[in-house]
Image (cartoon, rainbow, N blue to C red):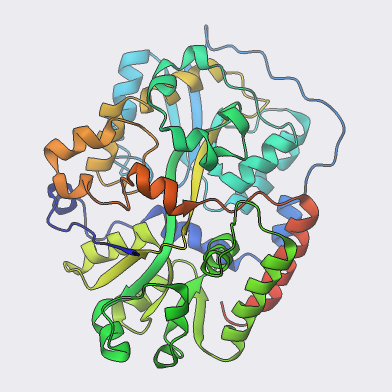
Length: 412
């Protein structure tokens, strides 16, 4: 059975967090507006043959680190950063935390020259999404991590994040997950029932019901939208073929051309669901959790289909030019402490934690939050419903991105 997951508005931490808080994925949605030319220019592999050497690690004498991250990924984003302040006091390491990442492509474009030469990018660590991290690893731009400095990672990293969900980095040698993001089927409950007579969608095929013509919205992120469409057709997106990709793209193109898909959006799609103009489609689950919080109700629903939902992480990496790798590893290890991971969730960072033991702490303070499968997926959900869009070769990335841009033209 497909699983409907509610956002627990009754939870204590949901009451405490501002109803106007914007989700991290709402910001990433703006990535869809980046033109294909800019995308390809930003993401083209460096192409160099030079083997880079890590910078000398000065962590023993320079107790500092600079960390670039996305918005809405840290407690106290007013600048108070309680967990970071506690880390500084505990470790003696001064952290400069910059909310500098607003899109994988644009962030990469800013630092690609330094990455290619192994010089300082201005950050000792930054968190980027799986597919971009795979590119950095493939180009030799990031340092291998030292697990001797990260006992909490060894003890508490949820196995799924090191296995199938970390397949782009075998053994997690070069990257570690910060937070996970689920894409799934979302719907406006009252309007879906009114139009279709059904309580909730149970398959991708339900999105194509004639009654929903012009009321379906999907994400501007190619990997999420086409990933879910492929899975709806029985495709394993961890090892799909070019033919399977283009079959899903053909379906997508047909639904866009016919007007059945009303729009392809990033951030602003949430407003369309809240107003009821969008009735069903492909969403980032955390966004609808936040939207229900803002609405003060359970008007919007999320379904994790049996066919599967896409799952991706934003991940720590240490660029070759960083001179403070051991300091970064100390910070990573700190955030893999279950108590700290739980504190982030209770403070309103509503994305999937990779830290085992965090849920058990949260459940004592906020059972509704801890039992939300969108924030704390069970082992069964990880094993059966969350799949990762396989890494693309540079040739595929170029080709598929152009095809996606063409199919989406005029609709975003």
